[in-house]
Length: 261
Ligand SMILES: NC(=O)c1ccc[n+]([C@@H]2O[C@H](COP(=O)([O-])OP(=O)(O)OC[C@H]3O[C@@H](n4cnc5c(N)ncnc54)[C@H](O)[C@@H]3O)[C@@H](O)[C@H]2O)c1
Image (cartoon, rainbow, N blue to C red; front, side, top):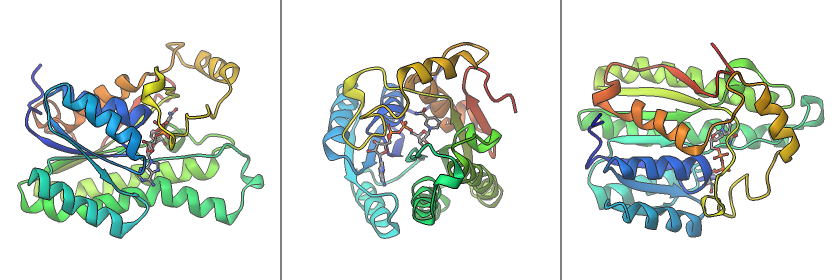
């Protein structure tokens, strides 16, 4: 199916490593131009080079998504290069595995900023542009933790739940401007190849030991985890007006059946 993404301009915040890398290349394979907004210049350049080899325009814009000003400046650069933004993907996220009683307010602030405020920063930047330009699609990367609640991920679960509720609210507010907002919740996704992981990725040093990963995957009905490309397929589908033009405010788990919500 032609998803109609050829020639569209896409910003992927956190598009350099692992899931973000997969999303960047999936859009490039659909013929969309990609702007990789990340804090890891070296890895973002690697992803951009790979995207260019697929025949699309790819740019790297250094943008710490936790900073409102940095995001506004990054959007300006992307518009300077591409002229228009059709799709925004918010992929930045991070967790530290610990019981809530072992955490502290400093860590809560960090988790809230990286997992939730990054989405607020990027969405507040692009909404005026998209609403003046006939619409757009936004896909936020959530987590099953935000749907089910996960032990030892209490604050992260709360943040991702906030991403889901916020996305629904923005979908209601922005629908009249032809802007669609959806969420994709991945299962455990480990990078497939070393070149998919940069220095700033949580998977530079795997956060989960292999035996724990294996055990967790056995709990999924399909008995296997997702690859970055599996998450990316759902993202490009939801970003496509051709395939998903009537879908907004939805949360889709791509997780081997773990969260049947
Ligand atoms: N990997 C999983 O198992 C899993 C499971 C469920 C949900 N998720 C969610 O999927 C998303 C991607 O996860 P991942 O494991 O691929 O992450 P990752 O750590 O491998 O990659 C994150 C990317 O974001 C960039 N980044 C980090 N901080 C940034 C900032 N402040 N501003 C801009 N860019 C920044 C990194 O350089 C990297 O390119 C996250 O939102 C995560 O919460 C991941």
